[in-house]
Length: 356
Image 1 (cartoon, one colour):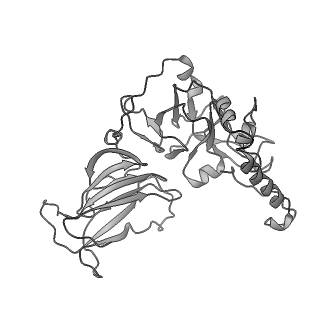
Image 2 (cartoon, one colour; image 1 turned 60 degrees about the horizontal axis):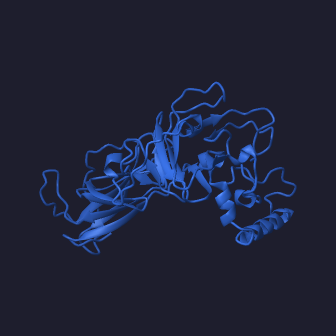
Image 3 (cartoon, helix red, strand yellow; image 1 turned 120 degrees about the horizontal axis):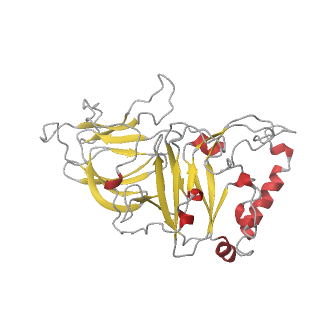
């Protein structure tokens, strides 16, 4: 990337990794963060940004580098770094990538390698500080007062479920442990999506449907945690690992420090051995996915469907509007029924993951 000294540049940062939180930095340069997950925030300046899997930041870089003494640095090349966060990656021993992933040049056509060093900052596994992520458009979240909103049905534990005889996946006798957040790890039928069954009164536990039939002007609250050694009633075991939790179709307000204009975004890092509290308004009827952004955790079943205002969703998603979905399901069944399309004729299984 070649820049002109004194100018400002907008960068759009996104972490598309499978299992790594990265810390982004440009040696000797400050970064002004102006949005998180497309939510405009009050700008703040830093020398690095922690980016979880699936998170997005808009940042402004001013091409006015300074050395450690605060003096203008007239060097022509600076390293751009993406550093795997400590305890937030799963690289094999000796396989950690070089953090120097790009070069910021001040001279067009230069082939010089930088000699700059990384600044001193934390590379711990974390989100950006919540107190920095102040939305420009304020939301003030009411504190939950209804006992139903602050009871056990608001709590969701992330952990691994042991194999129960005859209840394995993909096959009933497959003795795999599976990551989960709902009462049961998710396992969907590709050809029978939730939106085609909005008149159901009961749900297959494998679909991990969490009904939320609250009035339109109310708020839905959830506490997601993973900080118990075990839960005797369920047998679920927690592991002290961080999980980037992603919400689909809505921004979640993060209540961990406050209710008055808290941060809001659609991917938040559940800290290892910690919790996050989120809230969102019940103004978007439908079935919305909440899942872990670590690929194999999502594949294992660490996901749930928040079924928001089921009756309103059924009225909106009329049979005519769902015609295209039904046609997609018909084509899928037609393709799947042809053994020539499977990885092996007479294959015992085809879908080996959760379906998301």
